[in-house]
Amino acid sequence: MSATPKAAVPRTIVDMLVDPHWISFAVTPDGVHTANIEFSLVAYDGESRRVNFVDRGFVLKLKPDQYAQIAATGVHVRFPIDIPASKNSLRMAAQDFSAAGLDRWKPP
Image 1 (spheres, rainbow, N blue to C red):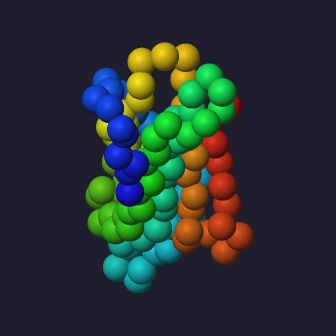
Image 2 (image 1 turned 90 degrees about the vertical axis):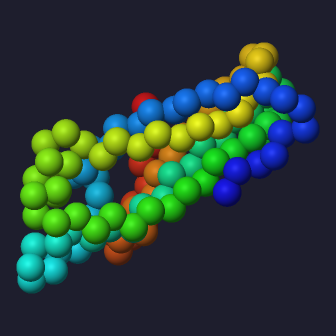
């Protein structure tokens, strides 16, 4: 889901590279790795008011060869978000719904 800004604003592209070792994959007998993760991006203005957000969930189902590639290179995700041109901040977070404790991480 993404918010609809009130006026035309510049589009920003956010690339994230997630270390797959932070994701709790379930493995089937035939070697398919499955995980359920969600990414959130929230843009705030200089007065800490939310100006836009993106919230996307994904189910990863990776065959053994795909998992081997992801394990070596990481999980790459790209999100467009419209952020007004001013002093803004952007917070990013991911949640692993596959993990028993619903582990959360956020970039430093």
